Length: 223
Image (cartoon, rainbow, N blue to C red; front, side):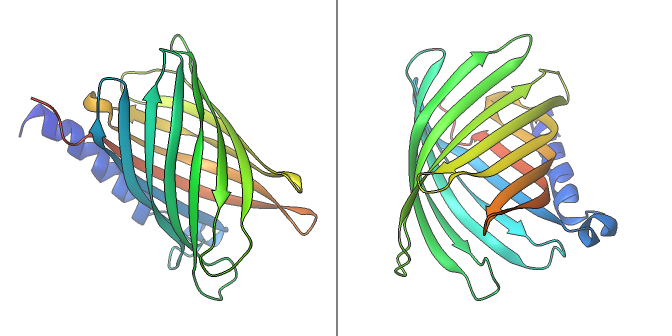
């Protein structure tokens, strides 16, 4: 087997084990499983198009209450600033009454604050929630900042997200901490723990999850 195959296959295997073989204690404790797979399907010297899918399982890891697909375009304006835009299609079942289709166009700005010795990135996005079934549309704003300590094998990272809408102000906070392995071609695999707080009917409701993600990087390389 080639070195490239080993480098790519090993993180995939680790990610699958984490996603599908989580301890029973975690499942019973109300911890959900959030999993993402994405790849760079097209790219140029200053832009790239990333597409993929995600699935979120309940704490029993038996029901996919939230799944969807997403495409995101990133245009690099300078070494520090980039423009972000894309579309997400999502099928969500919030209350066990069946999945509802949600279309979500989004756009924003990304900032590379620092690359070393601590990698710091931030992004601010505007999302428009559209429901073909007739539910009223609304707009949400989200801001994310992430810290990563670059390491050769496993890099620890910490991310914080804040979600706002016009009517209610702050409606969600999300904190994620975990480990990430970066590969050649922009690929990476990561696993982390997530704590989320949602404002629901005037009260903050916590939600816990184990997050796994695999990004294939440039699957169509230029030769």
